[in-house]
Length: 316
Image 1 (cartoon, rainbow, N blue to C red):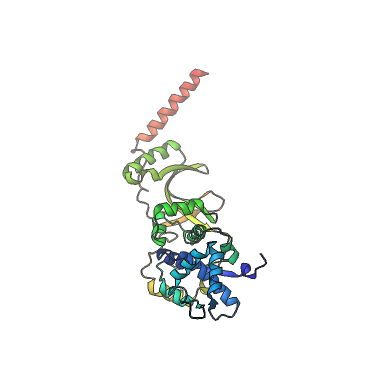
Image 2: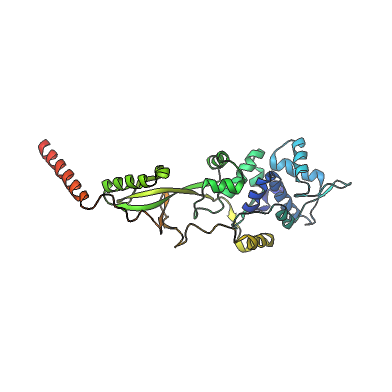
């Protein structure tokens, strides 16, 4: 642990994690990121001996020399140059790597961590899992993210996304519920739940009732929120120019915000001190639906109350 490289700080960009993962170059991105901070700590010339690059590959991926050679060869022309006759390798600039792996994610705050946070991982699979979690948790708890979006972001299957969420030590998961209607009476809430399940049969399992303080909230399950809380985030204004240029070129192609935007859908109404986030839909199509037909509910409730009151008196 006396190696000073362990304490060097490295910035990890969710955008590049996603684009390099789609190109099957994610492990190389991890190695290149560490080479960049080592280079900045030394001369900043971008020049390394081939043997040094192999050592960094082995330290990052905990792999044998043969695998390290294959990893290095796969990154030639993408992250670094081909070795010259003196076995010297030049690593590429961030601008060139971004050009090689253009991204299609909306901008987010970069993560900052120590080199040791990557070197403590024991296998290439653990490195991939760790980096995938940065994409999953890039928005933090403020925005629900669907599994389908994560599949598209990373270019992976649903089973891979589920495995990242289940096995990542760095992710914090928070549930999100859209509150459709609230009742003081449970029978009203149950009847209302029956009606909206009939109106939306394809998603009926997403609707349920939760106890919210002294009321019963009929809710619809929304996508979860994910956050990575163990590492600091770099200010958006500190993102490199290479990223900002792509942001400017692609901003019209990014999907408009669905959450926390009044007039476009969902607004968070409950956050602190709860096991979940409760949202309100400003365009709730089921708001006008009543649990009982007009005039029938009161009679039913009154008759039920009268029946149980008589039953109680008989028992006494």
